[in-house]
Image 1 (tube, rainbow, N blue to C red):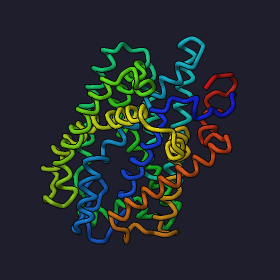
Image 2: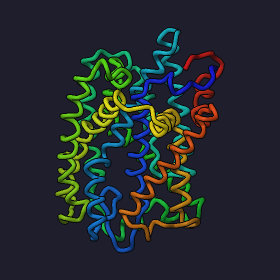
Image 3: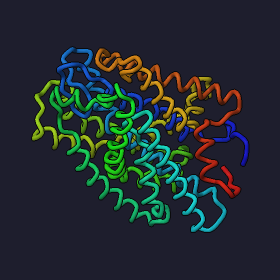
Length: 382
């Protein structure tokens, strides 16, 4: 196994995208821990009444919700192609390695969900990698057609999972509602992840396949060679994603009364346009990487992207401390606008930790663990 790879040896674009992705994930996840008394929710976001919370709900719905997971899926598919390229053996051995990595990722995700966070995404992406590993060898046309089909199907599934919850139901569905008994909480999360992971895998598969297609061209690794394509992705994807999220945002911001009948169509549109937004965000960051100076902050964010698994799991430790009822239990008192500040501060904390590891020439501990489990009994390059 080789030693830690210096920042200068890595393509800046993908690492920066993964580093900023963790901020999107923090913003997308944190409102799911809020459960103000007597308040219903849409997509786990409490329906606000105060102006600052309405503004936050509108912006989170149009810019983050349903966009962060498609960005993650695209970058995950992109990264799987990068791993496959580094292998020197035949396809059969490469496929076996990727499936082994997927299985360990599923196990790690299950442990993460049971012990810490009900909304784990590692299990879902491990399932995608396990089932769709052969997509690396598909033709471009098969990849894009399959991505389009899965995007439509995933948007439909997303829509039917977005129905509003009334106040009493919202409180009962709070992720730690029974966690005053931690063992019952772990059992509840084990049951929840067994349902949510396959559904999330279906909703994210289209973006994952697009990421494979993008990796074949090196869109995010070599943005200087693909500026026209990346600019087109940004020019179309970002505004389409924002505008497609506006109808649902009118409901999540409490500006329109929500029912199942009016939420499902706009949630489907929200999800469908989110598949354009996630990869477009990564394209925007790749273009920015061509012009950004290597400041200490940029270097730290790149280091975060290199240790994204460790930083993602660190977020869950913070959520547990802040929101578990047997610890600080802030879920019933924190305002939506305040949760944004907490999410940004949590992300900044992980950036600091990642940069400290970089300064000491250390990989992320969970990256090391996953690599050792994946590459056991064989020598591989990274």
